[in-house]
Image (cartoon, rainbow, N blue to C red; front, side, top):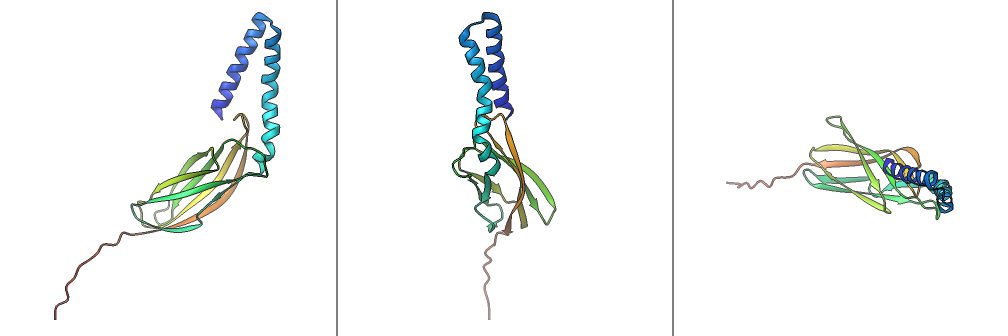
Length: 167
């Protein structure tokens, strides 16, 4: 992530500036640690970054119009290798009016929930287009492109009609 890189390079710049101005042995050790830490983070989390997968808990479901729909994305880790943050890019496509919206969600835990407000009646598709898995420091990432779909059918709200039958 950009914030992780900015923090890392700003700390590295301060340590290098202090090393050049004071030439203390402990700052040299700190510089080596700061240079080795990203490489170590990448080596530890690279197998987990390459083989992690994201799955949805719902394949097809039916919901009512103007109600909330809850989708759950779950992380499927690769063995015991860690991965820190996953950024999921998904598209919400309403097939009747052919409207396509793109969204992003960040998953830091094992599962994250998305709340959708369903305004239009008809068939909708939610497609995960890609997800990025970051290393433990957030400096490097691995992108996986996929086309995982989830179908939704949105029903209209029924209105109770009271009628009297006369003979």
